[in-house]
Image (cartoon, rainbow, N blue to C red):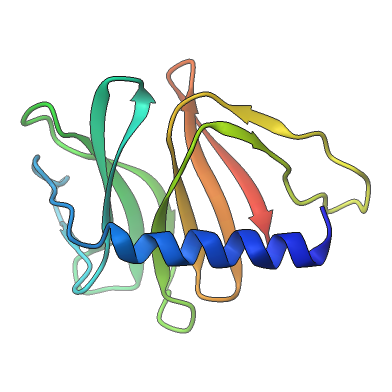
Length: 149
């Protein structure tokens, strides 16, 4: 994928994040984790079609531990933190809904990496202008696909 296509994908992921900023978390977060102030939430069928989940950007305590939590909107289960990252103030994280489809990862070896098929809706996670990735579930396991770096 050309650099231009990476920039277009990153822009699309960032733009759609704004549309989902008002979605609500319907289950409790793990102990010590709170939603980021002004942080976005995102609803989608991430784990399986027909079952809505909510993704939310979170912070642990008052420190520099941040993460992405996913909770089932269907009912009261505690959210699980599916990804953690350090201080993100320089490149604030944002979320976007990624539709099922085929996405090409960044190849760090300079080769041509094959596209990856994503069957369910997925979570687009971008860090300012620094990087973007797609977080998706397949066969009950979390996968990460880096799309820009």
